[in-house]
Length: 260
Ligand SMILES: Nc1ncnc2c1ncn2[C@@H]1O[C@H](COP(=O)(O)OP(=O)(O)OP(=O)(O)O)[C@@H](O)[C@H]1O
Ligand SMILES: [Mg+2]
Image (cartoon, rainbow, N blue to C red; front, side, top):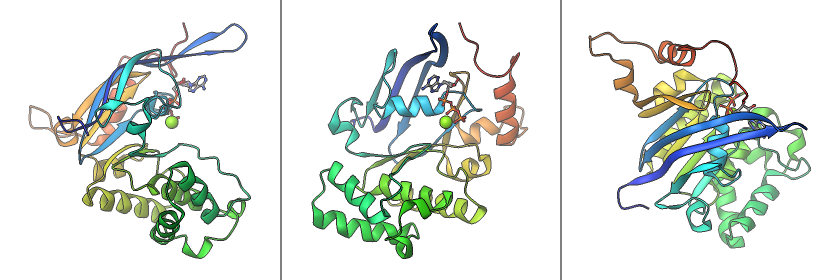
């Protein structure tokens, strides 16, 4: 952990993708910076294509940034020691469909360098916690979207990391599944974990997050404590939905980011 209590320090992050034969430029992240403090639940918001997943993938070392830096727990995010303490739920988790949740968690346990004994103990606890104990020996190809999301969460929690990075953890879940994940996030936070998650479900963000940033077209358009962002100097208040729409549309001419 860094001495100043920062779990994450992202500075001036930039990423442009090049697609197709003519290497057309798709700017995804254009100079984003933010910090996440130890012990907080931090929300990463923005409309589709705003650059949330790209930012999170860069943080996790899955994509190389063109510029900027990421520090995780005070260390360069590219180092193994920094990432060892971070659990990650990808936006689209692709698991081998013939594996059962138990086998999948064993596989990840090996990747995390856990002993067989620790992994088996933790695996049992987690499958119970995410409500999959009864389905622990069923192949993942028989799982519903919500069940797969729960497997993904168990995978992210397996090594008992201090910091959790969750890319749309409530997406595609029914109201009960959403409540389950929201309650789990709160419970994990109460037990000392720091959580950064992206979401389009603003009611969950309002309920869970102390601070948020809003991205639009790869740029940060709002950042701060949720309560302060929603309460204006003249005493009026705004809902997160209204703030989100206002920030997402501000001086917007048309949909997705322009290509250069
Ligand atoms: N691998 C890729 N190759 C080319 N372009 C990409 C790639 N990944 C993302 N992009 C582009 O980068 C931009 C940001 O995408 P990103 O997935 O980060 O957005 P997002 O905020 O996570 O959106 P959503 O809310 O839909 O998940 C988009 O214009 C997207 O098309
Ligand atoms: Mg995304």
